[in-house]
Length: 485
Ligand code: UDX
Image 1 (tube, rainbow, N blue to C red):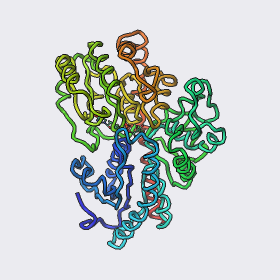
Image 2: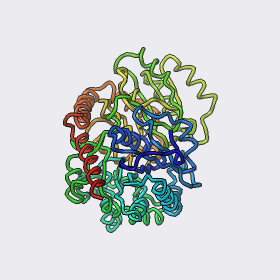
Image 3: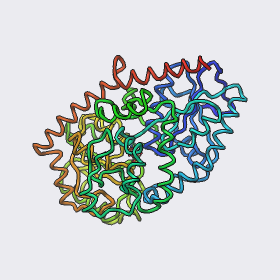
Image 4: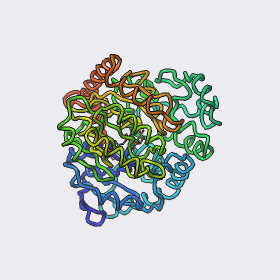
C-alpha cells in the first residue's frame, strides 16, 4: 500500500485515476476492473476514496493478488453515504449527490495537479456513472473519462431516456397508485422489452425529494455522451438488444465488460466489512443443491414485522439456510427474545452471518437458491453460478432487475410486493421457496439459469470471450491514446 507521498511510479506508465462511488455494490466491480487493468505492466493505478470512508476502507483493505501496488488516496468530504433506512430516503440520496458535485471536484483537481507536480501525471479517469462530476475534472486536464456502469445495460437505457420519461410524466411525478403502476405500459425505452410503470427503476419514480433528484438526473444523463468509453458490467448474450441499441447511439465505446468478478479465480470481493468464512465449512456438510442463501446486499433494510415473517417462513420451509443479517438490517433492531428463540429452534437447520464471502457461497456445490434483493452484483453473481433466484427487490433499480429475472430471463420467481410496498406474510414466502426449490417450474428455472451460467463464463473467457476481448481492446486503445499525446 502506498500513499500519495511515497508514490514513485515512472511517468512512462499510463496513470489511471479510479473514482468509485463509495458503496459496496459499486466498489466491488470497480476493484475487479482494477485487478484486470493491473495485470498489464503498462499501467499504474490510483484509487481515490472520500475522507469519510477512507479509514474504514483501509481498515479492511487487504490488497488482492495483483493489486499490491495500487495507490490509495483520499479527498476531503465530510458526508457519509446514507446507510440502512436512510439510504432509501431518496431525499437523503439527492442531498448526498448534490454535496458530492459541490465538494469533490476541487479535491480531485488538487490531487491530480499534485500527482503531476510529483512527476506522475494522470492520463485518464475511470469513474462510476454516478460520479458525473468527474467529467468536468477530466475536461480541466484534457484527459478522457471512462465510465464504469455497475448495473444492467437495460438500466442504462432508462437513464438514456430520462427526457422522454419526463416528457410523458412517467417519472419524478406524483406516484401512480399500485393499480395504475401495473396498468401503464412503458414501450418506448429502446433496447428494453415493454414493461409496466411499476417496473421502471424505482429511483426514477421518486415522489419524495423529487425536484432535487430530477435536476440531478437531467444533468447527469447527457454527460454519458462526453465519456470516452462506457464499460458495462453485464454481458452481451444476456442483453443483446440493449447493447445493440446503446451501441447504435454511442458507438463502439459502449462495451459489454462483465461479469467482471469472473475475471480472476480468487472469488473474493474487496469488502467494507469483515466476512465470516465459517459458513463455508457449514456449507461443506450440507447436501448438494440444498441450501437457500438469503442476503439483502449492503443497503436494504427490513421492518421488524417483515423480519419475523421471513424467519417464520425459513423455519417452516425446513430448508437448510444461510442468512446474512447485517447489524443494521432490521429497522429499530429485532426483538432479542424472539430472535434467540428462532436461533435456538433452527440451530441444526441454518447458519447466520453478518457478512458472507458471497462469491464463494454462490459457487459452493451445496447452493440451491438465492433469496435476493436483486442488487445487480448479486443477480449477476447468481447467474454466473447457475443459481435460481427468489427476487424481493427493495429500492434503486432492483425492481427492474427483478422484472428481467422473472419475465425476460425466466430464471426466478418473485413475491406479490416489493419490500417497501408492504408486508409479505410467511405463507407467501414459504410458497415462493418451495416453488423455486421443489417444483417442476423450479426445475425449468434451474435449467435456464444453468444455460446463462455457460454464457456468462463464455463472455469472460480469456481466449475469445466477448467481454474479455472487449476489455483487452479497450486497454490497447488506451495505450495507443497515451502514445498519441
Ligand atoms: C447497490 C444496488 O442495490 C445495485 O442494484 C446496484 O446496481 C449496485 O449498488 P447493493 O444493494 O449493496 O448494491 O447490492 P449488490 O449489487 O448485490 O452488491 C452487494 C455486493 O456485496 C455483491 O458484490 C455481493 O457479493 C457482496 N456481498 C453482499 C458480500 O460479499 N457479502 C454479503 O454478505 C452480502
